[in-house]
Length: 277
Image (cartoon, rainbow, N blue to C red; front, side):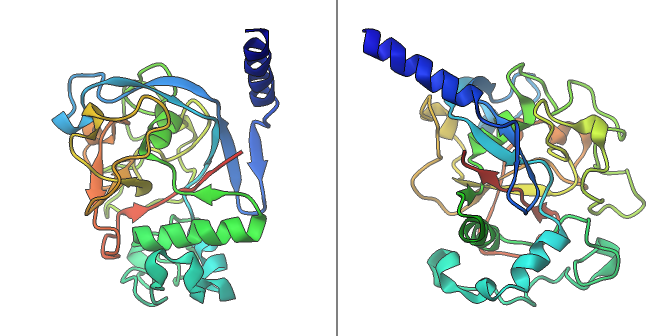
């Protein structure tokens, strides 16, 4: 019994010693402490796939403060590692010219002037995963896409809020439909009032974000209580975070979407990595 208490105390002490932020040269990452939170639609406004509401306990992790930008992506794209098959799921490298948005000025594609601080968009799940694998090799730390549960906790914290910043929404908090004459991504970090409880920005609106998990509509009925990682297989990967052309109510943190992982034709999809301590 005494040994068990000692190990528990040691674990708590170790968690308390984790730095609140880390930066390995590829952007700021924010600590999301270990512990439980309530996952799913707590408002009664969501869809069946956001239920049942359930309690999930997660280990500590770090989440990117910002979505991956065109400037971040260019570092990967211009590195010899981009063409290294070991970083890519199934060893298939997405051609650099595959994104139809890279050279579109109206979507602030990374190949156009003044676009560095805009979120990279039109990136499929395979490419987002490859970026994380490359980042791990560059830094010696473990980067990956967040699990769906990690993403939701990073966005809402532990108080069951509807949006990352609270329970009401307006265009001062996020980039969603009607914010601009032409709905598309805005520069990352443009909405400091929309920060999540841990300080992450743009977790509602702007671009949708890939998660690690396979998507299953009724997964919450069987989800493990600790560190759920999604079903073992599937056809689609989870997408979170609303988007610039979604309506206000669809920006809620519990909203779930999905996309075919190898398709790069969506201009509203980007991503942000997670980092293990």
